[in-house]
Amino acid sequence: MVEEQIAHPRDGRDAITDSRVLQAMLAVPRHAFVPPAMREHGYADSPLPIGHGQTISQPYIVALMTQHLQLFPDGKVLEIGSGSGYQAAVLAHLTPNVCTIEIVEDLARMAEQNLKDEGYSNVRVRCGDGYRGWPEHAPFDAIIVTCAPEQLPQPLWDQLKPGGRIVIPVGGVDRIQRLVVVSKTPDGQRRTRTITEVRFVPMTGRGRQ
Image (cartoon, rainbow, N blue to C red; front, side, top):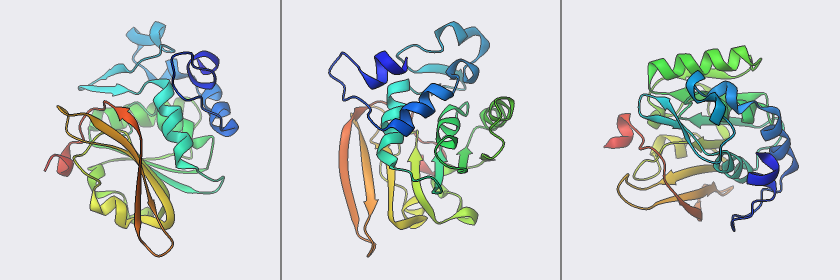
């Protein structure tokens, strides 16, 4: 998976070059974060259903988003959309300071159990509306969003440190979504850069408004 889909893709995708990200992708057993019926497809080059209309992202997209976070070893990162816990597990190989929020209670429990079973005891999991972020643990050096709002939620921007960055898909479910990096300059200004076009499940909760 890592060699053919991520480090040396042959379909025109940009190769992921950050060695820490590649090592994290090698270390996390993706099959352990998908439902038992899907485990034979655990390393497929595609998203996979995990129930409740949600998916575990394509491995390449997980690696791409993680690389663009530019997370340093003791950085504090917030994930919006825990899903089955896979992305949080990848992040936990880059920093011990991982917080993740999932709005679907069953998935939040699944993510927490999967992470515990695989030894990721340092990841904080919360069931709640990710649109609002996690102010008790803010500010964050980086925020990664694995569901698509129409636009960047203001609470997430407010909880980002100056110098930090948010990697987020933006756009309606029936329109082309853009995966963007939103950086906060030291003086609090916003800089947005598009990485690629993507398709993510929509953000629910306040993100639907």
